Image 1 (cartoon, rainbow, N blue to C red):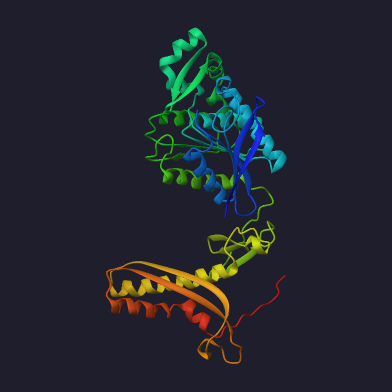
Image 2 (image 1 turned 90 degrees about the vertical axis):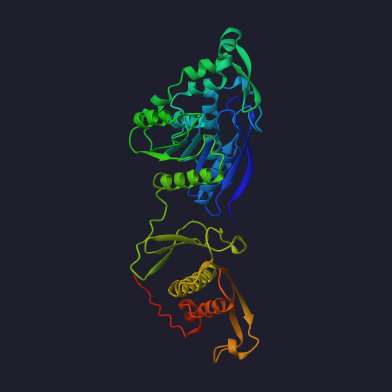
Length: 407
């Protein structure tokens, strides 16, 4: 299970910045940094959900509050786009010193613009992804248009952003005017994913078009469909996180990563990854999974245990066999749910024993929930079919395992 760890590091202006490090269940494939949107925090739904989805795919993510925001120290009024970029560099320095240098930067809204610029200052970064990013840092001025004249005349103004008061100084306007995000995208020299919702009412899709045209290949555009700018729906944030993880995989894995072996039809290959004490990669055709042991026995819990896979085989075979039978009969079966657990036990009678063996047996507890407009006779028949699934029969049959050593 992934872990969330609270940490602190020193920001660009000497203040203590609050952060969360989302760790994968097992060894991290790579480390990433998430930059939140303008005047937001590391705890906004998009930041937390996307970071956790990346962690679920083996990518550790550091998400932090920029200086003067969230739980970080400092005065927001004295910050600007440049200080945000430097905060990102300090976050990268922290990871390089305490974990490993980041290979992926992910930024949301103005945080997306910031990671495009910051990537040039962080040599370890091999991929950059943005979400609803503006093509120009000055785009944020529209959030306080009514105060621009006051800021220009007096040098400062109190504005409301997302219902909260913030002090904006003229130095902030001067600073964002000095940055060209499009030019930074053109000079990025790293793979770039631009994720944007076509109907984004805060940062229009035109911004994504300009960034995409400015960037050099390899570059990728991801439509966020009907998502809003802040990705306030959990399913939108989860989708973005999963897609970023899938895209970034080819750019962030280092040379020490295991190249999955290819299996033949009807063959499953299991090979050690070299990461952790017991982690193995499981390849069955085009399907690639992980197997591991729990932390209680020295593993990293990065995948099901061998018995977990055996439980899954029995459960899946049970469900599929019942489904095939119900479909042939045209019965109104809605959903089958099979729960399987395994333990070593002592048989109560010889019906559970194999002749010639003692009464210590493997016990699989199988619970089946059948949903649908079925009568009692149909339900009883489906339960009978559960015992006819091929894996069930295999577990009850004499089994021969032939093992040979190969060079």
